[in-house]
Image 1 (tube, one colour):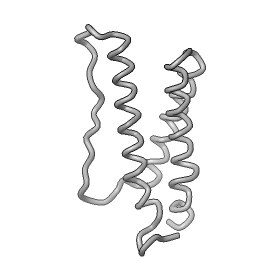
Image 2 (cartoon, rainbow, N blue to C red):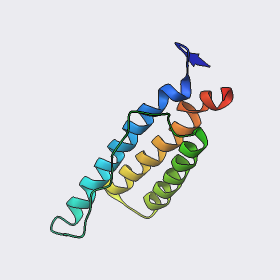
Image 3 (cartoon, rainbow, N blue to C red):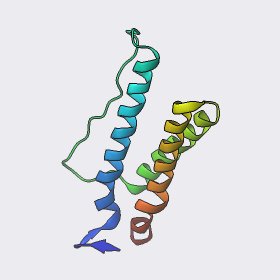
Length: 108
């Protein structure tokens, strides 16, 4: 499937990247809330590149699956806001690799 001559998966990768950046920001905010004076806390890297080819679909899907699994496992051992945040991240990652990127996988 293509959109304006570009495979759908390529068009969706910037959206998936933006979602993952939002996840990193939300997790960083939660870590800072839990340990506001910790100097050992570091911010995750959210550097993105806009030039060059997008990463291979298989690599993106593998990373999303690992992130979804990790977030799902942590959500099951957490409570309150933290459990909801992690559950939301797990759902978003799962939707990204099963829906947003699935159409491109069928045509690549």
